[in-house]
Amino acid sequence: MSAEGGCLCGAVRYRVTGEPVAATLCHCGDCRRASGGTNVAWAVFDAADFEWLAAEPADHISSPGIHWRYCPDCGSTVGYQRSERPNHMDVTTGTLDDPGRFPPDVEIWVGERIAWEPLHPDLPKRERSSLNDPAG
Image (cartoon, rainbow, N blue to C red; front, side, top):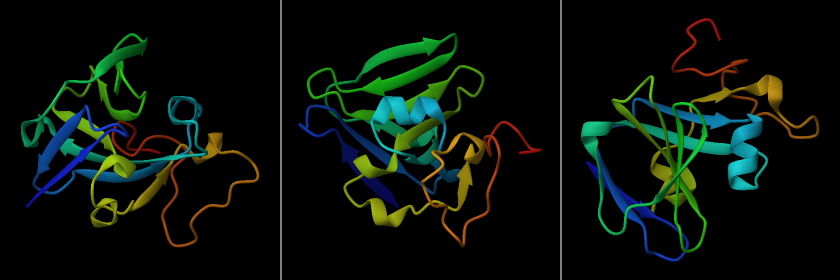
């Protein structure tokens, strides 16, 4: 199985294969600021199952080891990587051509959500990240 996606202007394109290792809906403040939205849906793939098809995105390092991938032309946030988990590539689910294929199965960083934002009633909740914090 493969899926493709890209930025608003089409300059940055990517392809993923296989199933995601995680599909999350993140409420952290960094995701809000990077996207301008109240939350961000992420599909996390093994890095070996990911490839850039067109122009590679720009890289903003918000803190040591945290890489936000975005289109240098239109500004769309298309990806995220952490140095502490180099075998993963996170893509913003909304930039996939068919985002409905990868619905979130957990809400993360709910302790940082905007107070007026409702949570999905059927999804499990985590105070922190589901990938690097087994306790939360």
